[in-house]
Image 1 (cartoon, one colour):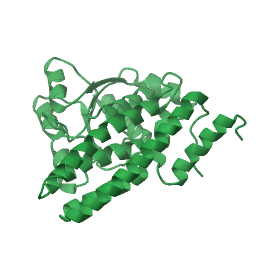
Image 2 (image 1 turned 135 degrees about the vertical axis):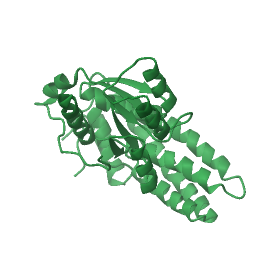
Image 3 (image 1 turned 45 degrees about the vertical axis):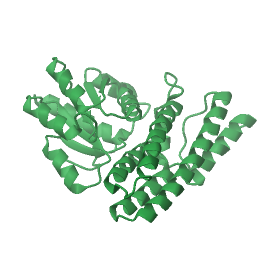
Image 4 (image 1 turned 30 degrees about the horizontal axis):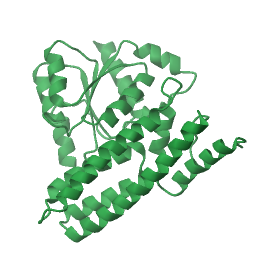
Length: 150
Length: 149
């Protein structure tokens, strides 16, 4: 049981990210790679993800302004976005990406627009939660080894 | 040729870390991916196994490295990249006579696209992201290959 209140809060935040389905086991794989020589590895990888994905979201927004939709182009962007999201364990974002791609492949423009809005919502939530998590982690200092959620 | 995520289960453990690292100290790996995040991630995975890692941002950079005399034991090759994609780069490397183990690492989900990528000259294919089990499997196969030569 974590005695330090900040560490306890950090552990609670981390657990809720998994319990609420925002993250999956892949995030734990990243945590297991982090070590004393690379103490900010997870945060650095996640920062690169947010940088890459912001660009892809902008590309998709622009592509969704064109009429008719270029479904191949949209699918291509989302393929990249889904790949990156999978690599950091962004579970809900990955699920929304899959749904978007299904709409693309069936040429369902309305479905694409709806799925994209939902994806942006999940992405925004994830980003906010992870930024808060890492901010607290920096204040708290190094934690114990990554643990898998029960 | 093996595709998919087949791998023997061999997670890093505190007791075997040193042995694994020592065995892999002389192996050189080239990570070819246009995503800075993936390059960083795979670089870290591989260094945990004691491997020497170099990165390239696209297939052309990878091919150019070999043209200029570089050599690697293992190449992790993404498929979708600008300038020269992984399939073309793999074909080019095999045409040049490169015999390094080339492992495709991509998020492709079309069986036809996977097949085409394998037929370009891959030894193995894994879905992104790589896991420690995938890397253990790759290194076991690489060591078997090196012991044969």
